[in-house]
Amino acid sequence: MVAAGGHLKAVATQPPLISVVMPVFNAERYVEEAVRSMLAQTVTDFELILLNDGSTDGTLPLLQQLQAQDDRIILVSRENRGLVATLNEGLALAQGQWIARMDADDIALAHRFERQLQWLEQTGADICGTGVQFFGANEKRILMHPCGDVAIKIALFFGSVFAHPTVMMRATLAKQLGYEPAWEKCEDYDLWQRAAQAHWKMANVPEVLLMYRVHEAQISTVSLSYQQELAQHIRRRQWTQMQSAFGIQPGWSVEVLKLRELDPPSVDLDDVNAALGALARQATTDEARGVLLDHARRLYVRSAGNSRDVVRSWQRLLAQVGVKTSISTLVQLALLSLFRLGPTHAVFGFWKKVALNSQHFLGKV
Image 1 (tube, rainbow, N blue to C red):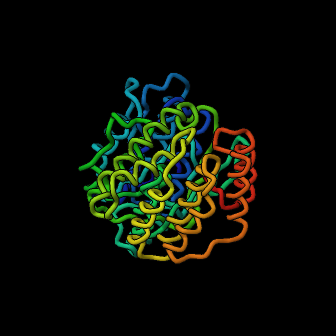
Image 2: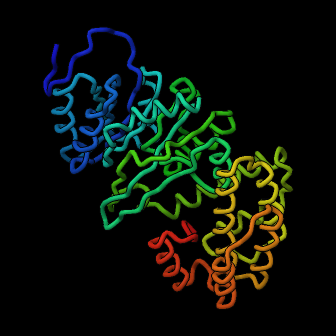
Image 3: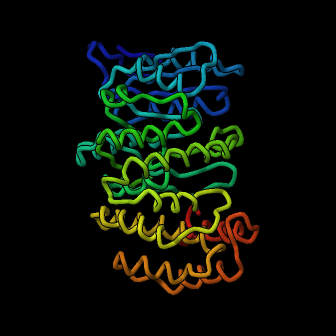
């Protein structure tokens, strides 16, 4: 039996392999492209749960048209309840073994599910994300997160470790934890942190499998300051929960977290070194050590404007970890320190932009 659009209707009543959860709110301009990228997946055994969260534009009629073309689409439409409530509703409705996230303004590559399922089987992971290619608003960057479980859990001390719309996670585990309303606008980082505490095994496919659209209406750009505040609370929770197991003294993590403030104060770099050194002892893979040093560089760049001893401190940290530094890193830290260029200085912002465009070490400082 064939549905409109040529898709074979499923005769069996067994649950699908994958449940795709896609919240939709006022996405008339983009949602059809997002949905069609799902329907074009090389893996076809899935249900696509579209949750219209009280859209006020032409989204609902468009979703109804799409639903009529493919019986894998499940459409839910009701009043606006917000993103976290919508995500949890999608989790509750999901029948699949795996839950895949997708946003209504992004585009998935056709082999996304195929590669993720292969990677989940290969790694034995409970959750798997992918790399993303930004597009729109003159954005062309590629974002890749760490791939291995150890490296991902080291990176979790510093920020989110998955591109949320790329993840595929084990349904039983995702339903147990769910999304927390208190952390809306940072609900993904909160979930990853709690999942790590629950001993989920984590992985990222080292490939770009999703095109991430950048536009003016995104949650990530509208409420950036509040988002950063929530992220700082989650970082503090991660450091606090892990400090005993990692041999980190409470005062050490306090100094590290100061460096993630908008305008970092002067810090005790000896305490920062001690905290990062303790993390280094847990970084048991080459990838994990590389991730740690990358984040350490970013912290030192942020501290340089308020520290005259930043170069020597950086050298002491690398000696502790057993890694040699590059001359260019030392020169840049020295210049930032000499001219007292902190993160709020206009020149620092320009420096960061140039570094990002050139893929230099400053990264997301």
